[in-house]
Length: 304
Ligand SMILES: C[S@@+](CC[C@H](N)C(=O)[O-])C[C@H]1O[C@@H](n2cnc3c(N)ncnc32)[C@H](O)[C@@H]1O
Image 1: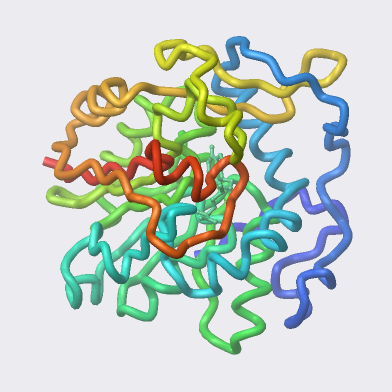
Image 2: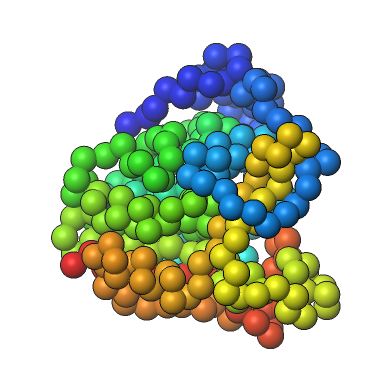
């Protein structure tokens, strides 16, 4: 199952990609992407359409840099939930070892589909969905470099999943669409719809407590400067007031209510601790902060 996105500027298809370094990926990015260098960072409302558009453009524009910077940590076929380095191979949040074989899995906000490749190696049948064509091109790049069967990818917004009801046994997302979507209550209902009864839904997001702190890895990131309760989105916008990047906040209680409201039962809320000896920073995630306050929340739920 592979979509044929229509907005690659040079009309290239993933099949046309070279099989080595991603610096050789086609130059063509979607035309008309707004420049973002001088954008203002503010708090203001941002709706479903505006958030979705901003995410697609931002991730298309920044996918190369993201994969450059984090590709080694993510691995080509590793399932890592968060900057703390929690591996699904150790955490078993999707099920006990050996139970993934033959299951249909939807990875949401998959990026270059590293998690899906890990799932494939365990005998699962993943589909990697992302809103960004450029991220999915990176998935193809990795597949070509490994001479392995390609991961099935779909370009779509997680808010409107292009699948029939009850199509999957598991849905998962490592920092995928959830933090970027305006209506995550609706997103939870969509995931519920495409899961089979008894299906599991696990997703990681920035731990909600981090909303109250500056997103800085150093000591300045240890003093609360904003209200944890303020749900006003974080928006970067250009001179015309068009959003180029949007992040949405929910409290822990909001997330629990969204899951319950969609028909999920919460099985676990994992708050990975910063491991001893792990010194690698990722943006605002650092050993200094990680040892004091949680950086990630992983919600594990089951569809009743
Ligand atoms: C932080 S990256 C995580 C990617 C991957 N899971 C990983 O761990 O590297 C967030 C991803 O979510 C995707 N995304 C953002 N909003 C989305 C949406 N509304 N629907 C689908 N994907 C979305 C982005 O394109 C991006 O690839």
